[in-house]
Length: 500
Ligand SMILES: [Zn+2]
Image 1: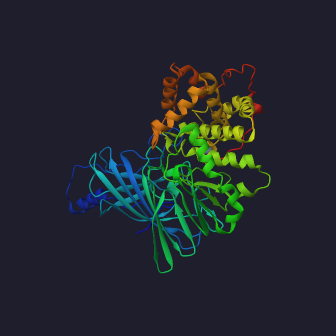
Image 2 (image 1 turned 60 degrees about the vertical axis):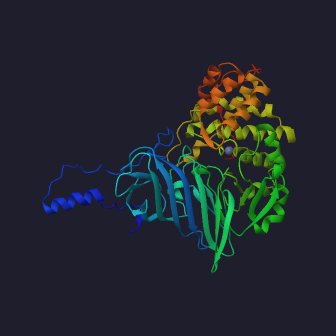
Image 3 (image 1 turned 30 degrees about the vertical axis):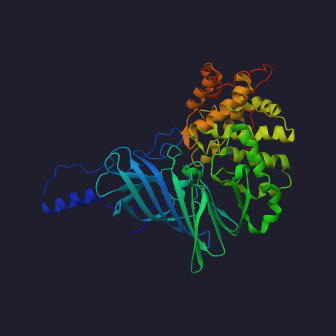
């Protein structure tokens, strides 16, 4: 029986059914009724029910079937391979915006119900600790946003794209939706022949059947659910070569290909610039996905960053600005994608670094002074801390406005921390730290404490007091080397533009 997770009708669990049968036949067993299904989480301070305890996902295999109408749910099958880290009588997945038709666990049909934004699965027999687990969910994936829940699928003029950060992957497919559980992904998309589908990673196969084509892509590195990308549209896929033969592929509306080429051709040099700063590009491919859609942000989806087309065609945006935003999303491939935040309180590690390289690129290639930008950020920093929290302890997003986690305190406010650190330990040690950070934690997750430790090790002295003030303090500490810089009172603080 299909089950809509927005209007859940709980099914009777097997154990309850057994008790019922016993009662009817007059037998008595000394068993207590199971506790009700409840949403669980991995303990993220900012998103308490995101992710789930008790298992570690190794891989996702996602299949989507697109009809050509982006207002209709896609038929989907999600298969999850995982290993249990504790004995589990139930398995919680995050899933909140589709209809579930059936769930199999290790090849056997399992009961399921919805609880909050979780899909709660009860396998026929409990799963021992350390066992392999294969869950197959047949479901729909609804591209039309709910009233108070944005994110996940983005409807474009010619199809669909994806924007799952921070907590919206589970509006698209059932998953362990927390960046602390990265996994490998295989993504299949079946679409009518006049569409092109592209996803994270590299193409594996293209298979035609009747009037539709199934496109398959696979990641070569683990990925967080928030960084998944699927583009379905009337698009052109353009290929070029980056540093060391890196395959670069861009996905753009086919009709806009010529107009956008002047921007697309800049990517290889931008990759080379970043490699000089922080070391080798961390993935198998890169490219930009330019979507005809109104998102209000750009997003660093792994190996294929999402941009609004308007970003490249709006006459008010100067060239240096567009290029620096391209570098912002590119630098996230190292900071945020290859090295992912262990919790969402570590978001400053993503956005602080991406803003840092965005500003540094503008400084080095377009004479837009990094120091002037940092001085301006310093003036606003106390206000940002008061309204949004310190960079490494941001205030929780407001209900219904979860995007509000992406606030100036983790963008320019966090880039300012990196500027202060460079002032404190010197440019040579700072660059050594940046390179060591991405080399040490690539394809993994890391915390603010990991960064603080590595910085102290690199500088050869204890920086904990420095970080206590700069990352966790209510007030912005004095800027090393600029004792004259002042921060304004909270009430005069203004927001800075956020770029995703
Ligand atoms: Zn960003």
